[in-house]
Length: 257
View: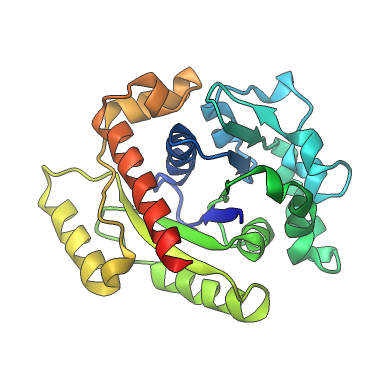
């Protein structure tokens, strides 16, 4: 059965897209069939995998609005086993369409169902907002990963996000589970980082992934070259951390079966 994982956090700049790209690549590296869907109109997941918007007509926008089929909007990436459904700037206009449409919360789910059998994992990179696009992602997802930057305000907003997830579970998607909280941009040089980690682990316990993602120049540089960190510098601490997270993800999902 396909596992559908959404990456959600209403706060921007927490490493959500970087995590989506590199976890998708890590899962493909261990021979999983993976589709990454870019649901952010900024198109960062698409450009981070080397796709320039003007160079191709495919977009998740057409899939959400019923103008085209999901299978016709999937691109092959440089990573073996990893496919991409790219975004488009016009996706910013999809919020009103989704809200005004009867059953708008289920449009993505209905559109993706015909391709489930082709993938082991479908990963959804959500925009930094709890709007209709994120709702569509959380309605179709089986699990959600919350990337969380290790900073003073790390816990701020997470409780609200979890409350929203509970509401979505009750109203739209009873199968939705929080797979884990992933600490990102971890810098061991600063006491603030250690305190933020302690606060999060004390509050959420085993829900927090054991692996933390270090602040790493090579991971930051990779998107500008249009490739994931694992291809840009496989031995970098960031790339290796994402491989360990992928192992944790697989283990957690297997334990939940």
